[in-house]
Length: 132
View: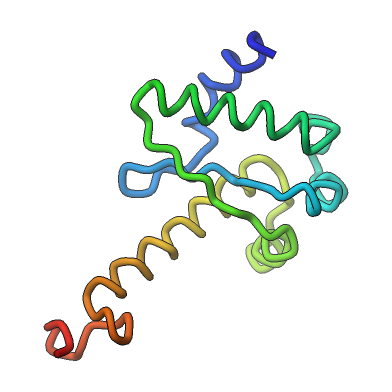
């Protein structure tokens, strides 16, 4: 596992898309793990079980954090991932999963900023000022 972690840790920042000083790391539920393996064209590089993947992912997350990289766990709904890939004509593979996580992170960041600009509605008024 440690050898694999070193190999993947070097590649991880390249595979994860950077969003404003954060790396979005796709995070999967145990319930959806079998579906992810079914829809992924690169299932042979995915861990067989969610438990194996989770152990690896937690180790990678800790290693990135230890190196000062701001990694963010991005919960992924596999059905949304599949629809996102279909809309873009992409195969469900490692690159698409990383891009999807980055896209979700960007959207969450936009929502957070909107909520900060007008906590009542989550939107800025037309003048760009905060609502009163």
